[in-house]
Amino acid sequence: MEALLLISVFITVFLFLLAFSNLRGSKKEDEAVVQNSLSISELLKNANQRLKMLLIRRKKPSKKRNTLEDRISVAGLPIKPEEFVAFRWLLAIILGGILQLNGSILLAIVGLVFGYFVPEIWLKGKQRKRIKAFNEGLPGMITSIIGSLRAGFSFVQSLQMVSQESYSPIKEEVEHIIKSMQYGTSMEDALLEWQKRMPSDDLRLLVDAILIQRQVGGNLAYLLDKIVETTRERTKIENQIKTLTAQGRLSGIVISLLPVVLGFIIYLMNPEYITTLFVNPIGRLMLVAALIGGIIGFFLIRKITTIEV
Image 1 (tube, rainbow, N blue to C red):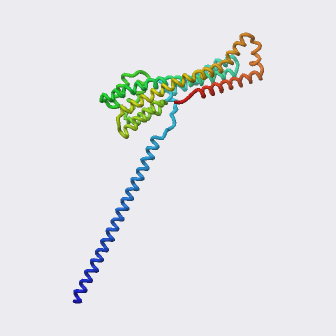
Image 2: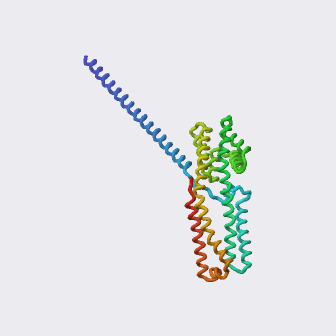
Image 3: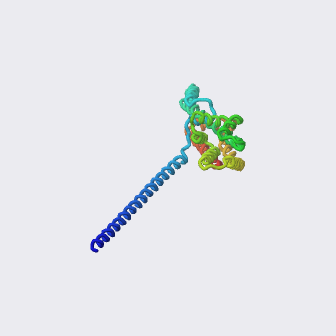
C-alpha cells in the first residue's frame, strides 16, 4: 500500500513537472514568436522608412538646371558651349578694339561689356521663343499620343509616331528622348532628364502624370486628356492676362524711351543747350542717374505686369 502511494506521488510529481516544463517551453516559443514578429515588424518599418526617404529624394523638386549646354540645347542652336564662349569673347574684343580707335578708354570698356553680353541676351531670346513654340505645340503632341494609345500602341511607339509627324521644336525634343532610351536609359530617367532640361510647366505636369501612372496604373489616355484640357485653359488664361496687362507693359516701354527720344529732339533743335549734360561733370552724373533710374523703373513695371499662371 505504501509502495502504491509512493508510485502515485512519483507519477503526480512527474506529470506536474512535465506540464510545467511544457508550459514554460510554450511560453518561450510564444516569446520567440512575438520577438520574431516584432523584429519583422521593425524590419518592415525600417524598409518603409527607407522607401519613403528614397521617394522623397526622388520627388523632391531639384534646382533648375541652368548649364550653358542645356540652354543652348533648349534654344535649338547647333553649336557647342565652347564655341559660344569663344564667340562672346571674340565679339567683345572686336567691339572694344573698334571703339578704342577713337582714343577713349571708356568707350572701349563699354564696347567690351556690350559685346560680351549681347550674345547672352540673344541666347535668352532664342530660348524664350523656342519654349513658347514648344508650349504651343505640346497640346497637339499630347493629343497625338492619346490617339495612338487608344489605337493600341504603347507609349514609346506613340512617341515615335509623334516624332515622325510633328514639327520643330516638338520633333527635335521627342527625338532626343527616343535616342536616350535607345542608348539604354530607362523611360523614367529619360523623362526626368527631359523635365530638368526643358523649363516648361506644362511639360513638368505631363512628365509627373506619366510617372505617377506608371507607378499606380490607370488609364493613361484619360489622364493625358485631362492634361490637354489643363494646358489649354492655362494658355487661355495667360492670353487674357497679357491682354489686360498690355497697357501697363506699353506704359513701361514709353516711359523708358521718352527721355531718350525727348533728348534727341532737343539735340536736333538746340545742340548747344543739351551738350552741357555731356560736358559738365554734374551733367554726366545726372545722365548716369537718369539711366539707372530708367532701367530700374522699366524692370519694376515689367515685374508688376508679369503674372505667373
